[in-house]
Length: 416
Ligand code: C5P
Image 1: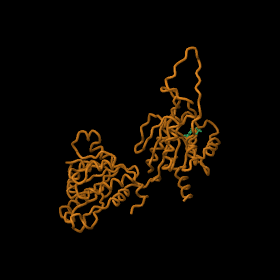
Image 2: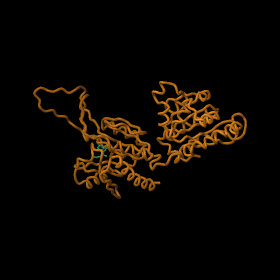
Image 3: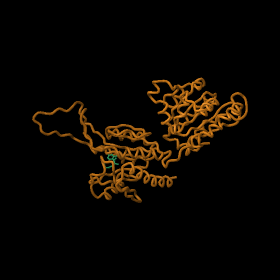
Image 4: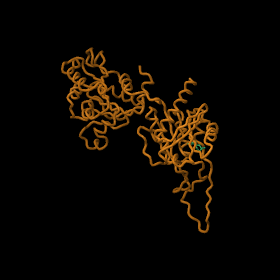
């Protein structure tokens, strides 16, 4: 049966499951569950007759998304219309695919939502036929199948089964839909394995805001760009990614789960909540070192005759160091912004914070770092170092992750 490894390729993948009206439709509840378990996002489209076999509500509950049933529903079209769904999908799976659906597809019909999606998508379509063995053997069905095989190249249209065996009607022969576990495994095989498939990477990004009173705070100029670029690159390399972000103006990278925080204490709390499921922790947030010792309940007013105001600050927890000292510590990567002696300071931070790796940059150069789109950095780990020349933060994010992967996979094989 499916190895965990191949199923991890489904992480973050977008599966559009089209259900047509056959008795095997009841098995789709299990199919959706398996896709979700493997980390895929699922949108279900049902034909009218499919809804006679299984309710949209069941599939909505299991997929966590509204079920799409109608081509001409203005409300649904305003939300996610047929073209959007066709573009959204990485893979379209039709299970069960009835004889009628195969006939429609072979003729390029666009008379219902599922047909139009199949016409409009650029992604591969996988068909899991299910029908009575005599219907499967019928010259008309076989003719439609040959037409489909001629019309579509094999990388655009794929066949999952049917299997042979006992059928719901009592007949024995080809026409059984493959089992949900087999369909899930075959769906996974459409995707390449990313180097971080099956890994959960948690990234902290952006500034923290430390409240002084209900309307004021202490913060810094961090844009969050580096952390967001790492989140996007980690998804592209197959990881499941959670971004714990301070306030930024950036939009959440696709397929990334973002948790918004404001203060360092919230950042710590969220990081620790996730720690038992985190494989790699990358701390790129610019955490305020200190916070006001007390947050005033009401807006602090100016005091006549007082030209000075003193705010007492207390040290914030060091999030990355706390994570790195935790009994369930993930592979932990920190950042260091320095203005001089970069290597010396980075090495001492690596040791002091018990990190596996540190990415250090020289922020005395104003062309790079904080708000810029570019960065140059040196990466240090106990056994080595790597220089990354000036490049875009997008490119740098990928380079950092490739370096993390090399050391991380060595440390994992050493502990196995
Ligand atoms: O000590 P310094 O602030 O230079 O360390 C920077 C690294 O430590 C970054 O990875 C930053 O995200 C992390 N950090 C943290 N919690 C703090 C301060 C820094 O996680 N309170």
